[in-house]
Length: 511
Ligand code: ME8
Image (cartoon, rainbow, N blue to C red; front, side):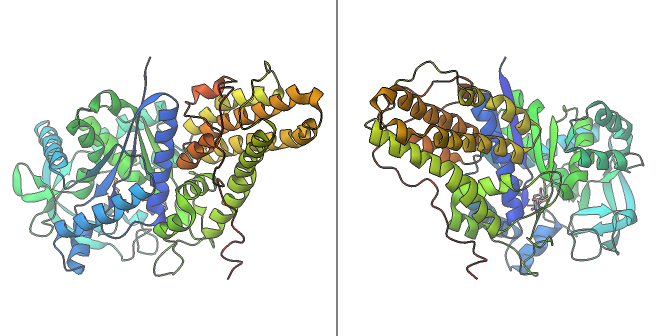
């Protein structure tokens, strides 16, 4: 039976440069994609940019550019370029201004229209341009929709509407029957709460005279498609255009932030149902990245960290690792430079990097740089190693990435302790203990091989570099469940750079 996995991120609004929240989400999805590839799943990973709507049109006008020119620069020059440098292992990058996407949106609109689920009506309500949707009085805090910088505006216009309310009982039942559909559970409960009361119908068009920047409604040239109806369809349009709807769609996991829960948990499933498409498998919701003082990060507050600068300073692996290890999906997570520095020093330099350099030094000194032939092993540390994947795998599937990484790091610490206890440097002084010495060193190499594979989704470059420094190639997660796959006789390279150079002090200490 072949295992299939499809993971997506929210497509970022191409209206300003990417921030650390955007990067965090892409790293979460990248971790899932890499893990599933390593664990034998046929995997497809989609990310991209959301390029239509009022918010973008306004930003373009402010920059004195045409919307197309504006989004081209941001999507390619900012978002995609940064994600490439960050090692985000996407298989496809969708932009909602691409023909392949526009064509599909029009096809689905036509289909839902013909099925009778779209009607024309006049509507009056409060509109949030920041969030690009009508909001209810109940959703406002002190007259403002959370996250917006301006209060919503009262708007009255004739639009096309999607009969969303009609699907509410069905959606509620689906959520009740599928406790894992929206995870972590706190977000699922929020959605169950939303669905207790009428959700209304969804306005899915905008008059072209007011918002010309959008996909034309196929049967009415005076209207363009509402940006959310357009954007959500990216998850399917990208697959259809590339002939990959099968086998991937049914296995879709959407990674999104908590502020866009309603569009993904309410609009999107009902849209899919009306279009006669199967539902996605899981909505993976994450909290927000906050400044270290627990406040929202913002340019105006002066407490934002620039992801490009962090990448430049600390590298791909440390940034991925710290964002995965020091956050949880269920809540907002304070994050900043000192967090990266302390994780880099403790887990990566002290525990992992140091173990590698210890074992390399001893192999070169005592074994001529050649991996010895081990005796058949049944030691506690070997048993712990081969059973590690069975503990890490469920933690990944349950979205507890921090705990999954901690599980592997605990094993690395146990390996360090094993070296301290076995004292290879003492064994080396006694020729009668030669075999024991060789077994100890082989055990450490094998333990590091296992740990490196189980950490690879979080430290993709360094995990490979670590194995290269031991003369080893690549392995799957399943290969960590067998002891002894590091080939005896392997010659390790004489020189290898320090895996994670330790940083002297946190930038805060340095002033
Ligand atoms: O919402 N911490 O785009 P977007 C963590 N185009 N994640 C954050 C964050 C923070 N501080 N701030 C934002 C959109 N995000 C739409 C999506 S999907 C069909 C359309 C997350 O650029 C946010 O929750 O405003 C979202 O998942 C993603 O960044 C893109 O946000």
